[in-house]
Length: 128
Image: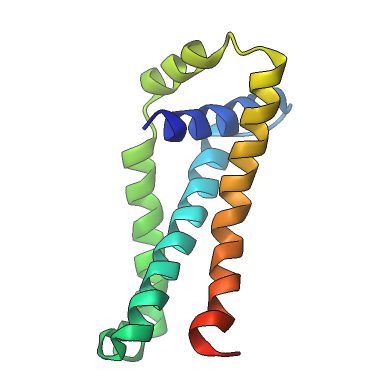
């Protein structure tokens, strides 16, 4: 859990440094997108081995979009807590330069790696 708190801290603190930015929205949208990609990656893995679970053939596009919106709203309520996020800022505020640089690399690797994993697994699972 500490790494996840750290991811929230990093995304939130990056947003706080930008003028005219909405750091809470940025964190929620970024993490919602990354979580959606991670879930979709898992879905594709299961779909490869269990083709009968293909739910996208059974529902319309409108339900998929509605599901994504509901997913984002649920993410907001699960992730955002103003008091808890303030505690994250306090918890990690005393980072030295080395830890800050290492943390930046880890968080960026987590975010980009989650998305790249999806695209790397597509040809592996489906033979593109």
